[in-house]
Amino acid sequence: MSKPDVATPSMDTALLARARVCFLAEAGTQAAERFDRHGPRLLHWLHKLYGRQPMFDRWLLSLCTTLGTLARARPSALRELDGERERDPDWFIHEKRVGYCAYVDRFGSDLNGVAERVDYLEDLGVGYLHLLPFLLARSGDSDGGFAVASFDEVEPALGSMSDLEQLAARLRKARISLCADLVLNHVADEHPWAVAAMQGDQHYRSYFHLFPDRRVPNRYEQTVAQIFPQTAPGNFTYNDALRSWVWTTFYPYQWDLNYAYPPVFASIAFALLKLANRGVEIFRLDSAPFLWKRLGTSCTNLPEVHHLLSALRAIVDMVAPGVLLKAEAIVASTDLLPYLGVGETLGSECHLAYHSGLMAASWTALSEGRTTLLRQLLDSTPALPVHTGWMTYVRCHDDIVWGVLRSDVEAAGDDFTQRIGNAAAFLEGRRSHSFGHGVAFQSADGNAVHGTNGMAAALVGLDSAETPDALRRFALMYGLAFAVGTVPLLYMGDELAQPSNDAQDDAALIALDGRWVQRPRLDLVRLEQRFDANTIAGKAYATIKALIAARNDDSFDPCATVETVDCHNEALLAIRRGKRFMAVFNFSGKPQAVDWNVLHAGDGWTTQLQTADDASTGAEILPAWAMVWHKKP
Image (tube, rainbow, N blue to C red; front, side, top):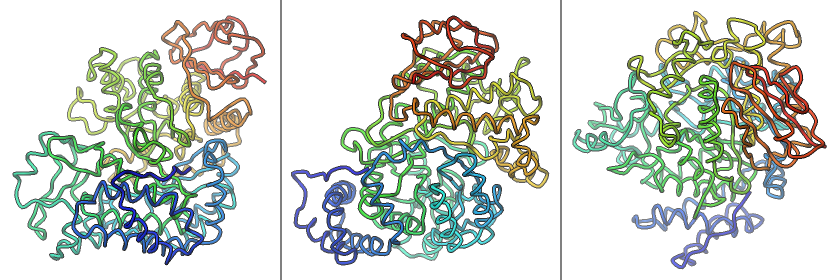
């Protein structure tokens, strides 16, 4: 899980020694080994980011003192977990954990209600629970909780910090790791830092990017993209109290933090560790690509972003090494691997990253009935650094962000707007032969390509008709995510084939932000039907259970590299993972011949999982949208 200390010719060994004294004075001498392993790395990255700033030495020593205090405050049960995971840095890989993602109120009403559903998650086979934002959010619009007003309080309607600690303990007992969002890029305009800035506090004004007029913002706008071009155009908002333009990448009430100011980094690091000490084991680092700004660039994926994440990782390794960091970097595949660490940051950044390109490419394959782009993306995905993995998923609380595929589509020689526009239109039911019932997101007109909303059942056509074809499409999409990922993620309600959200109570939310289409409340009727094989919910639940069971088989090696196998048929995707597992997926609406004798390259294979009547040996026909998993003893 950890990387050996980094030393450079320019390292200030005297400063490192002083930092060590400050840390151990609070943490105790038992923490010396961790500091000696990770302290040099921390100093390396912080010096690279802030070393030329006045008072750097003083700031660093203060930081290390507080880190030591937080290390000492870590509960004994979590210290024990830290030790176990330090000895087994691949624990989250070989344990074959399956993730589950949900909003607290939509899944269990509040944190105590979520605790009452832990048995359900255990029975399903979940080992990782990502609860979407539950910290205190701004009043009114809050971007689904991502406009955080305090890192130290739970949203009152959802419970308290005590409730959070009790839930984390209950999950830990069930061997389910709790994942929480740490919103890195911004805070709400009601956060104490923002309030102090509006009151004229120069220290907190430095926490944000403020401009007295539009001259500099206009220069940035020339190269910086818009995240919500329809509902929140532009990247800057004028605030009367500040008498300045403030950088607002997402919504006007979410103020971007200025990570060039060292106290911002320290404040965010402390917020993470405080939550870790309450039992959060995994942090989804929201909006990670946007943390550093530079004129003339897109202000995404800049080198300093990776320096910041590497410094944060060093702190986690030093204080709470049982914790995982997961990058929420919805970027092109060429920009994604660095979030797991490459080059100078190899092995020292995040443990997990969403493979958003795979998700978008799989939906493209389903809409096109061919796997050329999907295979191209898999073939171009580099090998993972050690002790890292992909988080794979079919749906989440956000839209399908089509832009992550732009470079891949253009590399294939295709026009992005035309090809992906057709895929989006198909999934949104804007083609006569479409089975999808998705909804366009942030598209100015029918020709724009931005995002698509909808639950998985709606996008595969399972929401309107219980047909074998629709069920196979549902299994196909999740089957690929489970076969390829290190940690596959279930989105709440998908295991019950819940349709898109059309609740009257949520109509105003959906009108304001179309992503609420894929944020329904857990359907309690379907929940009761999950064991009834005669219902859609029962069939979807059985499908997910079968995938989890198949993945737990000894033949499936989550550490093995995913390799594609040429089927000489663009409708099919065949993959191998290690020497004992392979799978074939038919993304077309027509039966396809599969010559298993060629694909297997040897004897001894047996069928492990299938959504076809028979595809075990020889040259077989794989029905429309069917998949088959084969294994060797």
